[in-house]
Length: 396
Ligand SMILES: [Zn+2]
Image (tube, rainbow, N blue to C red):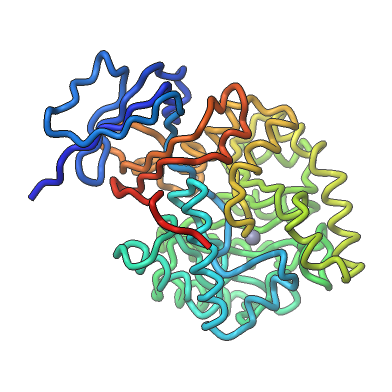
């Protein structure tokens, strides 16, 4: 039997298309999908519809976190060590994390690296309605060199091993391929401008992934490794914290998305909390912090398409959005970077990221007007994911 239609009314709708807000709007939902969006005076609500009246709140598309991990909690420290653990503790952390993510209004998330294929299991459990959490796209095991950042349990050295591991990941259900190119902040031995793979190895990875119809997301902070990845035709550059203006211009020219994040380095509950006792990590963290604001100006100046992720700072998507607004992003544009443009970056724009008829009914309400005060995104009230109400979940 067709479920009853659902009408969600609110003071305004920012629909994720980039168009001006709809005042006194309503979103009409039938089953899992959106049937209509418009002014309350223009959209006919069926007599049998269930009505949720959000009063003066604002309706938005469910948020899209374009870069996170399910099992990691940065504040616990040694993120790579967390990925080396057996599956059980990792899954327990993931269940807690994904619940917090959903409760913060994130209805879709891209998971860019887990061991043991736990992300495939989590994706399936969420899709089947057995576990609360964002709809997941998963990378499964990262492709990283033995001496690379992100080297937890799986290493891929040389062209043959890169191909084999990509094929195994695809066979196990990967939605995308994640490759670690440069060093990272949260590992002890790698420098952020150093890079692990030869140009030929990156080309092989891109060729193998694209032949299997999987996009390639690359962890890269800065230095020559970024250009090698751009030239190889990867799909997204993740982080880019030490890139320069020319790098971002090159990304724009190749149609490559930047997925950026700030909470894990800038929020007190991030790396600062977890790895305060490791001087080599803290030195890189401080460099990243000092550079981040300036780098973001180059992002805006270059015209590269950019999207936001939390990189395991579960529940802090609002903080990511507020931070770039503080650094000069237009609030509406920052919202798009966490909705429609994030959905585009991860290849889900046909289904998620905006409130339009035919798309999945991922709808959240926030207590306030985010175009006036972006921090109201912290106050998420109603959460609808694929037409199902999720905000009544108890959390933590
Ligand atoms: Zn990450």
